[in-house]
Length: 304
Ligand SMILES: Nc1ncnc2c1ncn2[C@@H]1O[C@H](COP(=O)(O)OP(=O)(O)OP(=O)(O)O)[C@@H](O)[C@H]1O
Image (cartoon, rainbow, N blue to C red; front, top):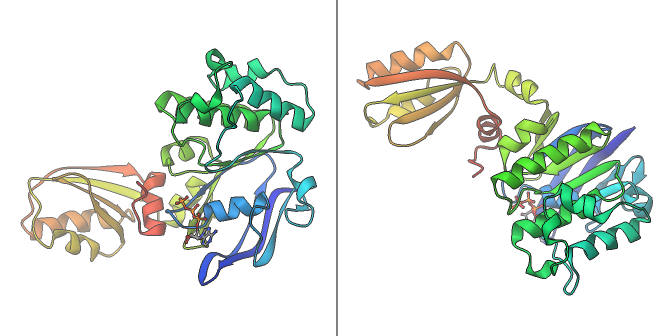
């Protein structure tokens, strides 16, 4: 059975279409990354899973339970890290975890959980005094209570330092390895690339791609990235590259570097085109297209 099943789900806020007939499944046991530029509809979708928002049309279900009509059953096996969660005034970190343990009626050890998310040393401090990253770690800890079958995490890396982000990745891997399905939205594409089996890309409320990263690469014609360093930029150079057959995206990275995603066959034509414009090519190399390159290609936007 699918862990998450979205059936032609749409959401309209007055004139704003936040989701437009989104239809996909997240299989049990997958780690699934949910991507999209700001305002694409990611949080709206997650809010529907949690019944904070209702679909205008279509439906969403978790392990076969409709998130609106059978919300309590749907969320029973779920651990959640919602967007913009604020901690309770007057409760320590440990008490937050104890609260989650009591509400889920399980017997986890709060200190073990705080240790896992890296804030064991701050267990008895008021959570309202925590830094942003510490609070984010605490909320992740609360989501992990009771070994949920599905983790739903809205931007889990928000506020985390690089160590925290690496720890987060490790926790997602461990959770997946014990059998949990992990569904998370993120703007940190390296993180998504490192842990996800599949990704879905939302753009203006529409799901424009759902695939493995390798699958995305091959549907973009091989997804080669050419990194070209030139002595200096020449007027009309970027437009000329864009006009070459097989070129998908052209972006600049610094004063002298151009990154081009294209089909394999286009590489030589690009270099020939640059020579004919009198551009002095200092260096070029080919990389595999990263998830960020593909994201730009699908959404036409730099993510960060
Ligand atoms: N309560 C609301 N009332 C009206 N419009 C809303 C509401 N919530 C979201 N929207 C609109 O729905 C669209 C999708 O917003 P959403 O928050 O789901 O995007 P997102 O992909 O999570 O963005 P971000 O990456 O910035 O968090 C936006 O145009 C937003 O303005």
